[in-house]
Length: 131
Image 1: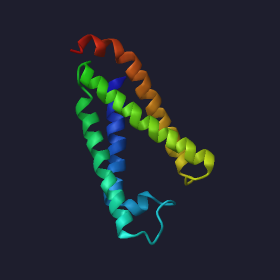
Image 2: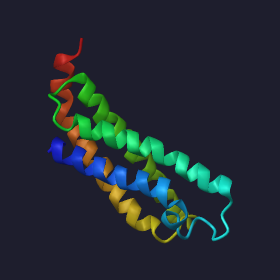
Image 3: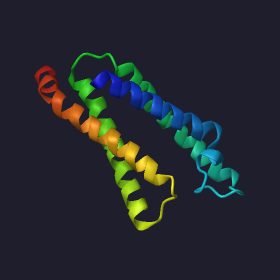
């Protein structure tokens, strides 16, 4: 279950990262004003880098044997997707988020739940190989 999850997360994060880098105004439709400042667009582009970095981390971890390091990748994804999902929940419930946030809420909750299950299943293997 973990390998397909890491591949899917890597592809998702790579698409988000590339969208932030290449078409930040279009990616932020409904949230980024039509007359967005160059500083705002530069900030959005800046965020694309970490998304691509995590995508590469997930991609490279997809075939790793159970270990404390692989478990760290899983926990990091759980934390990242979990916090983003909570932010989506707050935005949707408060009305502060754009309409598209409801779609991202479902996606981010699904990733967070999947990484939570993966982490739970991997705990014995990771703790057995930790030094």
